[in-house]
Length: 278
Ligand SMILES: C[S@@+](CC[C@H](N)C(=O)[O-])C[C@H]1O[C@@H](n2cnc3c(N)ncnc32)[C@H](O)[C@@H]1O
Image (cartoon, rainbow, N blue to C red; front, side, top):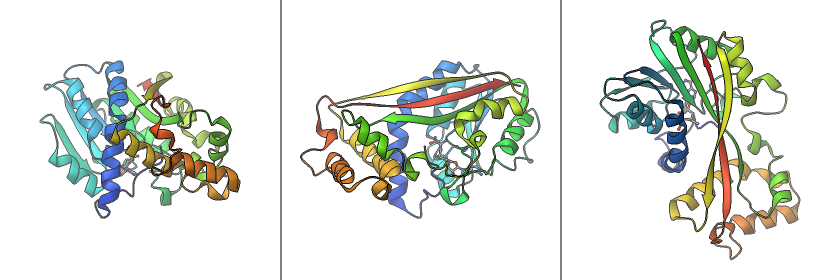
């Protein structure tokens, strides 16, 4: 999903939105963390940990004999994370492009959710090209250590309106932060190539889905409204007037046609995990 590097405490509404989206995705992220079976007692890095919501899940997975470092460039996110941390967790402010202060071969695994998104800095991206970051992760891993790069990869949110949804998805916001002119190898779907390029072995990708079934509770509705805005909020100039009006009717919380009011609403989103071994 679009990088949230600019979601800071300076804008409390955005921080609340961030917390809401973290909760919304938590069941799926937790399922993915459980699926990789992190060794009990192992030591890991959560690179670009945000508010630390998933660092806690990682820390729980490795047990009290394990330890997790959550690292993020945002002071505000780290300050929030520090207020809610588990005992086997430590948070620090840092840039994943320059981790020279961390010793080589110090982690059993490195996890990163929605952070190694190449793209423009203005969109909160951590890098223009992923190579430097992935090489840095390789250095920090112990021999046979695991790398896990996780990314939001797709969604279907407008059941019954496939054409409208397809047209909305041609807007810049829907593919952000991948923008026109970027190299195909710098898209997250090329992440297997990034890992192979940095020397990782046994590189694999797997996609996980989260179903969204109506009737929807308030927090799910709010999260979906935020996501509509994030992906399609700027699509007005991309689609026809009729399509835009239809989209507004379907997604306006006050409209009688609001798609999220349907008892039998069904949507989904996916996260793809790219993994490899040093
Ligand atoms: C979309 S958020 C994902 C946060 C968290 N992993 C999650 O899934 O909720 C991207 C995160 O990357 C952080 N970030 C952006 N550039 C970074 C950099 N160069 N070094 C470290 N963190 C960075 C942002 O502050 C933000 O917390």
